[in-house]
Image (cartoon, rainbow, N blue to C red; front, top):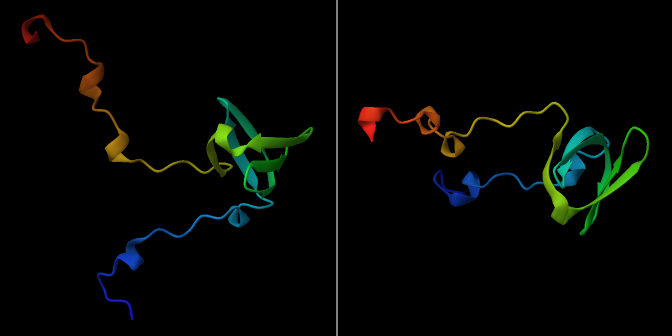
Length: 93
């Protein structure tokens, strides 16, 4: 039986490509954004039907894969304070 503070409850849901299968997706591979319909995936490749042709991406070249139009949520741990970009003033050095 699970306890209220059990670590199993805190684990995120396991990702599978089946949730995105036959949906419009965006893939960033080798720095290029591709859009199409996810057809499937295996241990080494992602298969997608693009607008004009079929696309096969090796998994190791993919840096992002998400449902089309879905935006990443803001993560304050990955943000940089705006002060980082400001030039130091003459008296601050």
